[in-house]
Amino acid sequence: MEQILIPFLLLHILTLLEAAQSPPPPPSSPSPPPPIYTPFDDITIACGNFGQHLSNSDSRTWSGDINSTLFSPIQDGDSNATSQFRKAPPSLSASASQVPYTTARLSYSEFTYRIPISPGKKFVRFHFNPASYLDFHSSNALFSVTADDYALLTDFRASTLLMREFCVALDTKHSLNITFTPSKDAYAFINGIEIVSMPTNLYTTSVRSIGSDTPYSVDSTKALDMVYRINIGGQPINATGDTRMYRKWDSADDMYLDGLSKKFSVVTENNTLELNFVEIPEYTAPKEVYRTGRSMGMNKTINTSYNLTWAFPVDSDFSYLVRLHFCEFDSDITKSGERTFVIYIANQTAEPGADIIQWSGGNGIPVYRDYIVLMPGPRSQKKVNLSISFRVDWLTEYEDAMLNGLEIFKLIDPKGQIGSNPDPKMTPHSTSTRVLAQSTRVIALIVAGCSFRHTCVLCPRILGF
Image (cartoon, rainbow, N blue to C red; front, top):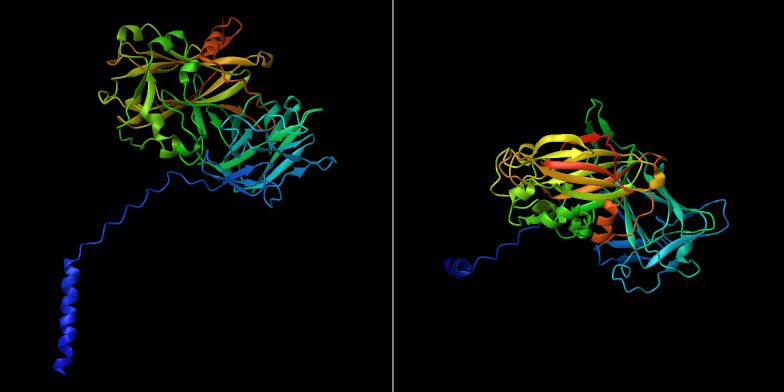
């Protein structure tokens, strides 16, 4: 019996010795961090297309609406005509060669997409490639777009490849009706539709009214039309660089600067700073927005002699939600009172001594500030300039002011105020000329050295030049 057990005992000892001499297994790679935000609905429709198509621009799969059980358009029951699908003509533009701009749905009669989605707040984006398609010349495209009770676009005519973004809310419904209605003797078209869920309180805010005790509520009864979203002083951020909501952040804020601001202001950045999101959710904006900015410069004498000013053309006779993004990333500024500046809007003092550190609680902590700006004026005038201007507080230690990012939205009431045609992108020269034109009225939103997250509503005074 002992002779039988000895070989097995020796084999067991040799196995243990071999295991002890073997190198330890390599450590497993760390799992990727969870996404900052995961949208419940992430719908992408390639209008006038078949099947599934991967887009190189946003790395998402777009679903065609032809023979689709979910996204096929419904034609107006009073019309014998049916919508058509067409392939876009060849283009030298890299963007126009990507889904969803390669195909279109077009019709001389009304058609509707009834899209099943969950209740809640959504981004709704429309993609347009205003080319001339077979039997549809671009000059004959003129139409309106509604989403349930919201009139989003009216007598709309796209002149360049573009995307229009809106924010709408569905409280209890489980579908969204998007209707395209051609004007008389014209046709409507659409290349792509996105619907993406957003956090409930991303843009919902209760607004403190300057000079009034009555708050202004940007609630779910209002839709938002995104007019500007800019990473001030930084690079463009594409859809994949956003916080899983696929927003695009433009750059080139210098297009909208006035002459002195273009001459003296400087771009600042701090790419090594570890941001601390304790005042606002991390999904509010990409980190890149808070690591770059534009300031007045290092010369205190010059800084006290001009205002850092941007002027953004907007439609008259509308109200706008203006969100300003701030983050104090200068390592020398760590205490409240070291960098402050004043905010004026239309010659009204919004904040007499705004302070980024005071509002955020410390260096490297992102915050934002919301305003409701009323832009009066006859709609026949079409465009007025919404100016955002910073002026330093000469009593502060660092006589400077800085802005990291901004978003501007037009407010839309149900079946009320309606979006308009976009103007072509202007060159810096033409923008400056437009701002200074004698016929232009300007609403001045003047910020003098602050950074914050609270909200003000202002009834601005119109200045004629």
